[in-house]
Image (cartoon, rainbow, N blue to C red; front, side):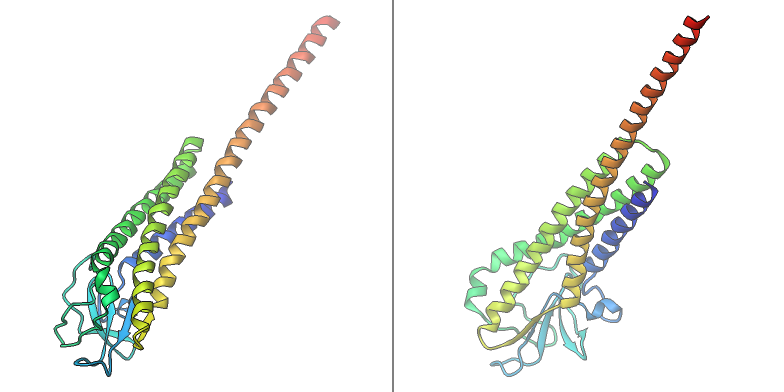
Amino acid sequence: MKLLLAANFFTSLAAFVLLIFALLVGVSEKSPFGELYWSQVSVSGSSGSSGGTRWTNFGVCSFANGKNVNCTSLKFPYPYNTQYNYPNGIGVIDNSELRSKESQMKAMSRAAPILLAIGLIFAFFSLLCVLLACALPVRFIIGFSNFIVFLGFIVTAAGASLLTYVHIFSVTTIKNDGVSTSTGSKAFGLLWASVAAYLISIVLFSVTWIRRKTHKGYQKTGGDDRSDSHSEKTSKYSDGK
């Protein structure tokens, strides 16, 4: 049981830490987060533009040597917008298909980080529940923890799905114009790893709850058997007298 609780703790901790990293994509140019982005468009050779653009949770940036540079002022959550004019003069491709879905893309790209932040809160509470379960062996705590983890998984998976859709759709659409585009494999790796950690947590919490329930039932049954056996022996002893 202790091993299961320890596994629950580490998977919840993994989801918590990974979500922090996913939420901080693009928060700073100088930190390791300055290498993270969701999607990238290289607009060299396009009419009236040069260089490229990266989209993050906090704004848009140019890039050099694999790092984000000349980012806009921080704004969270930053909406995906292909029509933005950047301070350094870099533009993006004007794609009619993207423009037709611009309002949807903005709404989804705003909602996704908020859902991830809610998932982070659920991960924090699941950590607290594991610590409580270690101190107070009450089956209700494990059941409540499983419920918290399930909700966290739902909102995190929803946020990850929205972000993935927005950037995969935009990259695919722009690539059809013959433009060099890519998604941020590191950022998406962190994002979906947090979803996987949540999914593993659900399995572990469920197993822990079932094991604890079975263990309680076994103890109760064993106790009753011992009690009946003791009563039978006492009765035989009385009859012998």
